[in-house]
Image 1 (cartoon, one colour):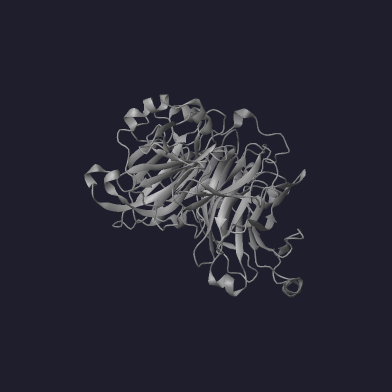
Image 2 (cartoon, helix red, strand yellow):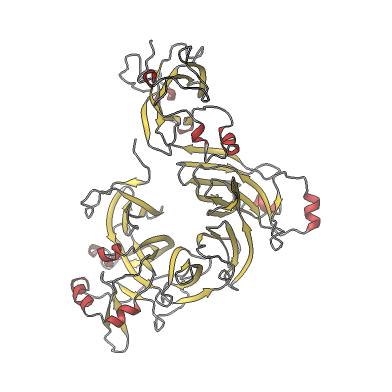
Length: 593
């Protein structure tokens, strides 16, 4: 049992302090059997990349020096661009003369403050062209006068000869940089291209967005059919409005600065997620104020907008869009639907039909599905809300993806530590949970095997003595932040479940205006005990809780509370009456055999 599934203690050689680091982004390739992880200390922005081959760390690279880390340079997003052919000798001297596949990844980086150390500028051999070399010996491109080719080749193979002994001369290069060149390099965003093979990791190029010094990117994507180009979205620090550009990763030039969202955005509104649609040149962009814009990249036009909000005691407030996914199966096409799933930070998932419909079609379809609702915006009146999956993930939705050619939506929670598969097979287009994998969203406090044996010394599960999978179940009680009781099977994960503490707690919490159902659950469990004897006749599990006098009886067969509340006759059960005194709080529990 660990305190956090997102925290990892790095085992690489350059992390000698032993400080736990947080993984922020992970991309992998199944054919190469490699994984690239971006991580960093919790108090800083992530700026370290580690290459894993299967489960072993191969190499770790720091993207920035200490000065830039202090200036809050870090990775905001990772874009997987595909595989390319490279000379294996550039990454491993023992493989010189051989070619192999490499994973090409673009790291979207930005800084948050006004201070930054500039890179050095080296004069090329031709005398007229100048090459800017960073402190890590990597060529920096991105100026307006860059003469690199913008051809849309299908591969990204560089044949430039690598500079020798650049790393050893980096201090001299830094001293030779002039103040005017430092001013030119004052920018807030850049893209770092990484090449990863099974045995090595190399920073190929740094693309500084120097033509837009006030642009701080926060997210990126690779549009379909746009070869060697990526779309970057972020905020213009001079106006505090969202901005989106198209960048050529071969030349480092800004191909286009999109204007379709500038006049429709509000101050401090940022793009939080982008997703490629099945239609070429069209993407969906979600914002921090609950808007989802459908954009045409070729014509720089906003097609329409979908708005999302939630009701609170103070009124209607917008929600943050955290995930997007388009459904592409044939069943939706035969029904004339173009579903788009929108994940929100309040845990709901909204499913929209993007197919435009006129009023006559809407009258014919009225009453077919009770969950349908037309958008109130006059311009967007032809888009239909098919259904809303309420509180699918407590704490917000982290990621959504429709499985290819299937009516299945796979979703993960930002804080719920859950993975849910939803199927859309109902005539009214509503979804229902098909499978789920749920764990504790807070550190567990007490764990033990469900039935550790009559002597309390544990069990030995094997096939020879007839032991089944039910003996491999572990009871786990969460801490004060979650207050749930779960059972996990080490043999069959389909047996994992949460023990029920009452029906309709989520709905009741919403009616009472609570953030989630945690406040309606029992206090934190501090101890429990079980007994298998006659577990079909009465409960076989008893729990006691922190700062609580009563004990509660559960049934492991039913997976819920089943028995009476164990208490003295003069103790009040109602929370509206005075509780038992502190000296009566339970501290330990045991059941006779």
